[in-house]
Amino acid sequence: MHNEEGISILGTNIIFLFGIIILVSLDLATSILKIDMNMLGISTIIIEFLFFLVPSCLYIIIKKKNLKKVFRINKLSLGNSILVVLMMQFSIPLIGCVNYIIQMLINTIGRPLPNPIPEINTPLQLLMGLIAISLTPAICEEIMARGIFMRGYEQYGTKTALIVSAALFSIMHRNIQSFIPIFLMGLLLGYVVYRTNSIFAGILVHFTNNSFSIFAAFLVKKLQKMMGPEMDRIETVELPQINMITSVFLIIIVISSAIIFIGLLNLFRHNTKKQ
Image 1: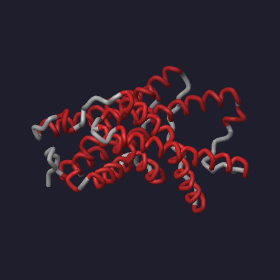
Image 2 (image 1 turned 90 degrees about the vertical axis):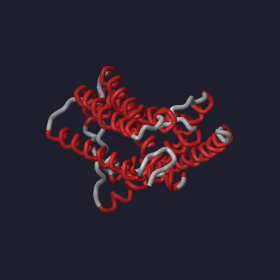
Image 3 (image 1 turned 180 degrees about the vertical axis):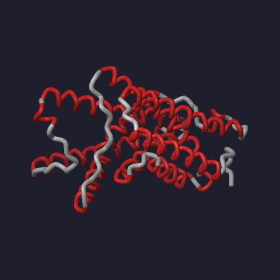
Image 4 (image 1 turned 135 degrees about the vertical axis):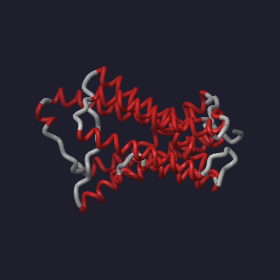
C-alpha cells in the first residue's frame, strides 16, 4: 500500500530495519573497540548522514517524489519556534516523572541499567557532543522518523502515523527501560511537525532536548571535579531516597509543568489551526 506521497509500508519498514541493523552494529563496534568521545562523535556523524539521511533521501528520489513536500521542508514561524521549544521544556518534568516511575518499578525486581552518557569534560568535547549528539541526530533522525516513518503510515490516519512513528523512533534508541519516555517524546515531535507542516519544528525540538542532556552531562562532570573524590564515588544506578518535603516540591513542579504545558499546547493548536 502507498500513501498519497508514494511511500509504501514495505519501503518504510525496510528503511527502519536498515537503520536498526546499522545502530546495533555501531553498538557492537563501540563495545568491542575503545573509542574516545572525539572518535565516537565523528563516527556518529558519519553514521547518521550515510545510513539515516542518505537512504531516506535516496528512497524519495527513486520514487520520483518531491523531497520538499514529503519531508515537509517548509518555513517555521518565529512564534511557533518559541512555542515548540517551550512545550518541550515543560514536557521534560512530565516525561521525567514517567521515567522515574518506570525506574522505581524496575528497582523492585532488579537494577535499572545506567544510561550511556558520553564523557564530556572539556569545551571541545562539549562542542563535539552538541554537533554529534544534538544537531546531527536532530536533522538525520527527524528526516527518517518524521519524514519516512510518519509519512509512510499516514495512509492509516494521522493518529496511527503519530503513534507508529513514535514507537519506531523509540525502538531505534535500543533502550527498553526508556521506551515509554522516548515514545512520549516521539509523539510530541511528530505532533509539532504535523501541526506546523514543517520538519524544522521536529529538528528544533529534537536538538533542544538533546542539547539539554549534553549540557547536563557537562555540568555534572564539572561538579564532580569541584566536589573531588567524594563525588566520584557516587556512581550508582540506585534511585535516590526522596524525603517528604522534596517529594511535595517535585509534585508541585510536575503539576505546574503539566498546567503550563496544556496551556502552551492549546495556544499552539490555535496558532497552527490554519496550517
